[in-house]
Length: 434
Ligand SMILES: Cc1cc2nc3c(=O)[nH]c(=O)nc-3n(C[C@H](O)[C@H](O)[C@H](O)COP(=O)(O)OP(=O)(O)OC[C@H]3O[C@@H](n4cnc5c(N)ncnc54)[C@H](O)[C@@H]3O)c2cc1C
Image (cartoon, rainbow, N blue to C red; front, side):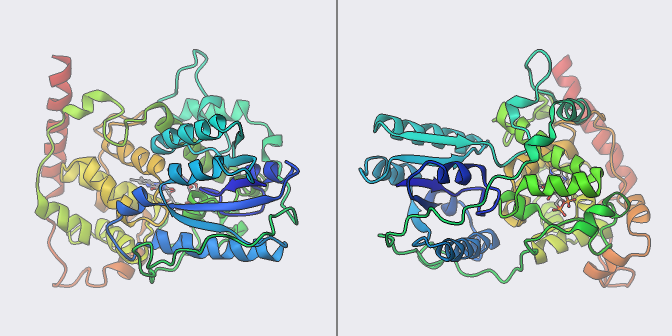
């Protein structure tokens, strides 16, 4: 028997590693490990991501049983301890998994690989989570890109359509011996079901077709795909989505290239979750203002687009990309609060939270990351509202009291805050060059 370890690829169809495991010749057993170290870091016991994963595992289990297998093994604990046990099990001859580019995962997978190697067994790792892996798109001198546009140009010059071919989906080949493990319940894991509803697991072709016209308007229904969570956990294949983008509208493909770009950045700058990608930006003197931070978190800043975004996030676990840019710019420029505060808050709330894209998005907004524009691009929340939600459709949905006497006044004045940010950034950066 061989194992396929499900991680960011919770699907049977078009799954690179699973497809390879199925052609190994031995019965395949799917496994999923709820990593205790990751779960213990989650503060909210109704965390929507855990409920999402749990439901998707139940679906996978049913699908495997429908193909004659005995179902998925789902266990809880330390991945290394579980793999040590399986690597030394004489019934198991190999491990298959898709690669994960986060620093924690990289160290874990290296250790797991060694366990199988030491036991004289194979561990086989595949590309599945991205279209182009971090090492595949580098500058001519083999160093990583820091700016998106030249990266995407190189990406497009190297990308071949064959990389979108679908991997065969299993129909049989599963291990049918009953599972020795009882699934932990959500409660055993320390969680309760979340009331949040995840977006549907299907590719919205009409949205992709009209993406270029509609993607920037947060009040527009179906303006973006809302597939972030499905790409994060691999419940939809990135290749299937890219095939849809190729046939319907290429603007959408660009978004998937951004996703590859940030995976590459995290791989080559593994300290970027804590440190500015452009080191000089770590010299900026941030404000310590808990009251302002709380007003931002709860959507009570007196800036309607910011407040609508934060309330949408708190209620649904989602926020539109345009609004993510506006609220992130507001936190780091208008309030001069450290981007790491905002990044951590998003990480705790976003259903589609992904370390690479979140850190990338936050560092982009604060100016410390991968952006060709200098730090003095400061979004004006009022003109963003005027451009992207003129009819106030989005704002009225989330901030119904806007325009009445009960709406909070602005916690900072735009012009003053803008000048303060410019001055503070300038001082911080000057302290490095002097
Ligand atoms: C401050 C900030 C934080 C962010 N945090 C995250 C995060 O934690 N997880 C996350 O997936 N995205 C993040 N993004 C990127 C982007 O906002 C979301 O991917 C997008 O809003 C998700 O909505 P959607 O699925 O409808 O996207 P669509 O517009 O339909 O795009 C399709 C897919 O392309 C990818 N994508 C789109 N834009 C980007 C982008 N700028 N960077 C990377 N990937 C992109 C996503 O996987 C997305 O689901 C962040 C952006 C900012 C500015």
